[in-house]
Amino acid sequence: MFFRQLTFFRFPKSGAEAFDDSLAKRLKKHALRPCGPLETQTRGWVSPYGRGDASFMHQMGAYTLLTLGGEDKLLPPAVVNEAVAGKIEALEAERGKRIGGRERKRLKDEALHDLLPKAFVKPSRLSGYADAEAGWLLVDTASRKQAESFLTVLRETVETFPAQPPDPEESPRGLMTTWLTGAKLPDGFSLGDECELKDPSDRGAIARCRRQDLESDEVREHLKSGKQVTQLGLVVDGRVSFTLGEDLAVRKLRFLDAVVEELEATDRDSPRSEIDARFAVMSLTLKPVLERLDEVFRLPRPSDRGRR
Image 1 (tube, helix red, strand yellow):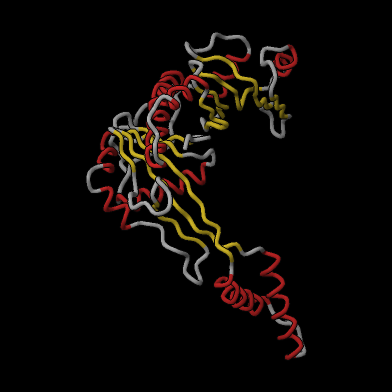
Image 2 (tube, helix red, strand yellow):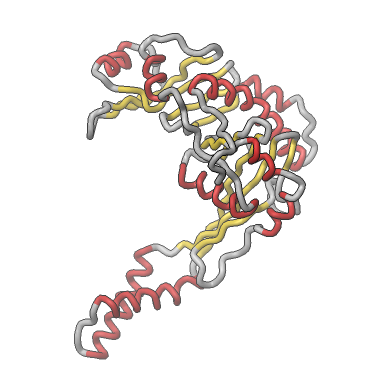
């Protein structure tokens, strides 16, 4: 259950109210339900512990783990187009003339009405956790769209939740570029083995380096030509490695040997205790990483002004 990527949100002290004793009941009211015959998708909360478990969250001190479930109907455009074409062909043969755009739209809606109840359903799961004390919400995705979907359902569930994307006071692109050009990295940070470099001009060239020494002459030549760092591989305290984007999305998050050894030392005699142990190790490991990112990029916790 270790997260593999991260999208961050920050929320003010008032946001901690969302994780009070009433949260469990609220989550249950917004539980995932199956797609109806004519629905294309549904979203709702499921147990972080998997099927058959009645718990809709896991709390450990200030940390709350949630899992958003989803169902999406799979209806390929080619299947819809074929059904519509058949209806158009039959109607034109019956009338002896071509039909107009409005009629075609009606036939497409009719085809969707016929096909949706028969479409396959694809399930999905997206986990995230909140640190109510420090004001962080972390979602296990690098997609801003998916993370916003998680946040939207959470807001609907608790009625109000004033979270927002981090607003760095220091430019991530600018700082990461200086690190790669030779500036001293923050304490505990070291370079990984991949990066993405982009020419800032419109339609500029992009260079991607993987499994490469980032202090090599080849990388420095790209920087000398004016390219800037938009993604950078980093290692923090020898405990986690990841690729950090200029949007502060974390990709390829890995918990290194020291963390894995800590997990192995815990008691895990059931699937539930396994998840509990992994969540404890993960959240406590990421806490100082978030503090470092906050310190380096200046990601202030928002105030309660302009609550959403």
